[in-house]
Length: 200
Image 1 (cartoon, rainbow, N blue to C red):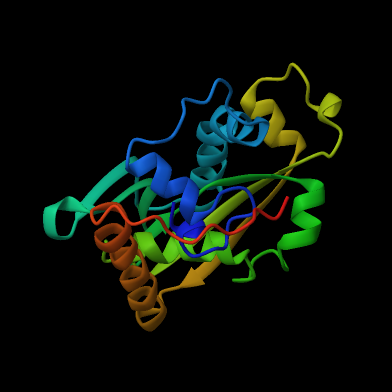
Image 2 (cartoon, helix red, strand yellow):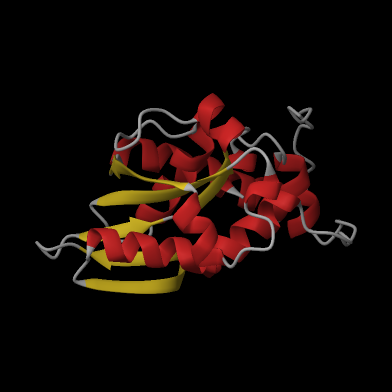
């Protein structure tokens, strides 16, 4: 939700999050293709990341609850420790080749979309992680190229990259404060946030 609250999500807005958190959101009949694809490939993508980076420890699906009344929450895809025992937040992403070319920078760098950066820094704000690894599976623009294949087969055929982001306490603090205001002023205060048109 962090990217949407900050106005960085192409598909959701702070208003959408507000509707959801205040119980006003209508049930959605279908999950988006992108979300379905990400869920389907996540375990295989994390397997590939673990095999390639060989962390000392690698825990999956780590839920974190912090803050007064437990308002700060996160479901981290993975939490690893490197050879030097440094803690690492791991956030897996699956994107189409078109979206990758448009929004992602040079593999191996920290050039990730702002929405992904905000999500990653939200997670580091709740952990002792020194940095964040973003393993990315880039699937072909033509879905027929991987249609009917098992997740590990898709990962083997797709591009695979790992981006690394360093912790940024100052930016983390600004993100957390913006989300805190949204939670207490808009959600708990039941004040409708400004509606921003989705960039579709």
